[in-house]
Length: 506
Image (cartoon, rainbow, N blue to C red; front, side, top):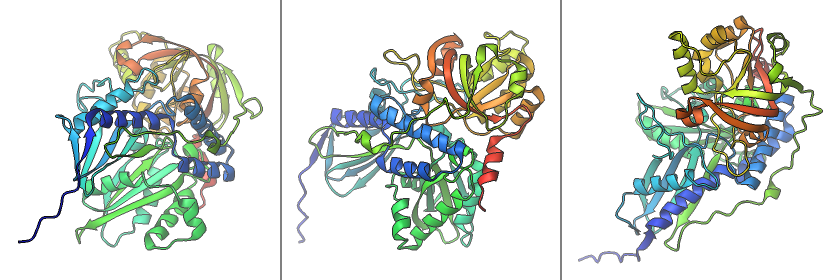
């Protein structure tokens, strides 16, 4: 009779050690970029030739260093929590609760931390009520049972701007993955906040391919080293080909046109059906947030911040870069008509805020003939949902949200309220551009991924309407020299069309 193999000693993971590790990991990634991303982004900054893209990268790098030193979120969208666990067969959890419940308790601790509150963005009912859960739970949890007696974890936070741009296709077996990716990238727009990464999952089934693509984003960024040493496999050849072809599209930082759209391309594969070629594409924004840790039963994980000396010390000088100063309290339609796509502005004065939910309410009120709670005549509205303030902050990190989500409301607001301009990130769609042109308005962009830098320009904040919407309420900000760029001018010219056209190399 064959003897059974001896069982290794069990590792006991205490409930609170696991919960605290998840919470600490989410707090850590909220304000600490992976050093490999910073190295590659710094190299992109040094070689960038487009002034607008170089300025955008500089703001992201300065913001990253501010987040690291100040322990505040690098982006106001503190993301959907995702936890990937490899649990060794020799591990026992000292708990009566399920693993998803433990993860969600860690999420609650992290997002409700009074010292560094993170913005809760999860809504409980995706179809109807869409009521915020208030604590950013539940997380997306993936668990694998593996050999060994430790728990290996990856904890990530992914914002809606990049998550919304995920794509999937079923190619014919003989079709080119590279061609599909290069054809697809321009259709994403710039709401995913490049420069970032592209993760590809090829094979398996539809669900497997999407998971592969997301997991690929957590691999070490090594494109500069790969190019230096040269490829050693067909997969590495494909990565370099895609890196070069995507960057040759000229999309550039924030879609403004430039040399770097991605700092790396990662690919994971899995066997698939002979008749299939599932391909998933997952972009990762400039807020590239994830961390790995291992639990071996000795206590919670520790997260040591990197040395700030690894971050470039870039000074974003506003006084000599040709930016025009704008007094929001005296802004007129004629002044707005004088702006041109690509102009850099410094805004000072009173600024309104509003996102999807507030826009929906306002348009519904206008349709019923009701007065708006806040007059918009002669005003500028900022598409933002800020993080809760701490200490002496006027407001927490307050970067822009994707402007195109407000496109469906743009014509009604411009036509019925006297609104002069809007601020968001990324491009506007054709219908919104047409409305902006017809009404002599403008659409401006702030840099996505520079939420702390933007917040430093905000001197005060108060809620004016729709307080029940939380971070989506209408606020009034008092701003001083808030940096923005004219994305769509009153003539309908768009920097997101002009910029990439200028820098495209294919």
